[in-house]
Image (cartoon, rainbow over all chains, first blue to last red; front, side, top):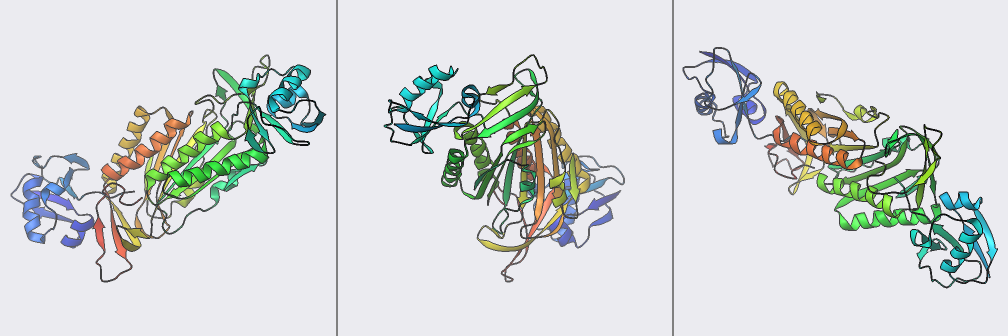
Length: 79
Length: 79
Length: 142
Length: 142
């Protein structure tokens, strides 16, 4: 299944890209993060993150569909 | 004893003047207000007012000196 | 600093109070609104006993510096005949951390209403109602 | 309305949000300060996930209208590379009575810091310290 991933802040720097389309056998954001964490050596653990699918907050066990867009959200620091 | 009186807000309108020098036998702001209240028919009672002598808040039994300046202060409404 | 002005105070809003250590700036604008206690207000007259008002205003700003960890605080109050929407009082507080600026700004407007010898007379749209000098009860004007 | 801007947001400060029934206006400016947790900060980079940030921002402004008796509320957040003293966020709340505007304005900045996907990276004067993406702990930045 193809999934679009966008990266921000620390994750963007560690992945060294802002966006990519991955082809994965996993179907939840939680499993996909585990896969990407090991690939890019992300410093943030999954319990430090939130996840958005198609610009809405969702759970890490949300069932993804082909070409959904995922954003893993590091702790925010606006203001 | 000559005392300078300045009037503001409702008192200014009721006295129909902003300032005057009076010659009085009284020596405290409290007694002078009673005298002026009866002269100008002021609507405010002394317990609704504060008093300043020479630009400082003082008590109504403050002992006045020749040519002190008194202001009787109606309830304030700034802001 | 506490000031009283007989002309528009809108221009104060563009003055900069920012310093490098300043993280938060809170401002309060008190404006003339078109109603009060069920009456349609047409305009307001503000009158100040300046000699004492400036002293009392400065006293409030001294208190606020003692009570809160702020960098700067300033207040200007308009006097004269004001129309609906006109700026009557403008306050700014700056601090490293935002909480202190919020607390300080609100403290200043609360105290200004309580202790500074400034009065206001309301003129009403309904001309059968006499203009009157209003007292500052809590939440009276803004 | 909630906005995100990649250029200076100073000009928002001169926009008028005043209506005839408005008595109180409270604004908050969050600015880049020159220090944080003992370090001398030289500049900040803000990055936003705009698609979600705008939705979350609007949600905060809806909440604030439900919780407080205000007339209007607006927030704009800057993104990009900011220098010391630059305006990072600007908020305005207008109301009939001042208390509601103070409460609303503070609520907005508190919630923006908690829920809107915006991040900041601090660059330090001491070049031996790596720039880092900081988390928003209470009273972290302003």
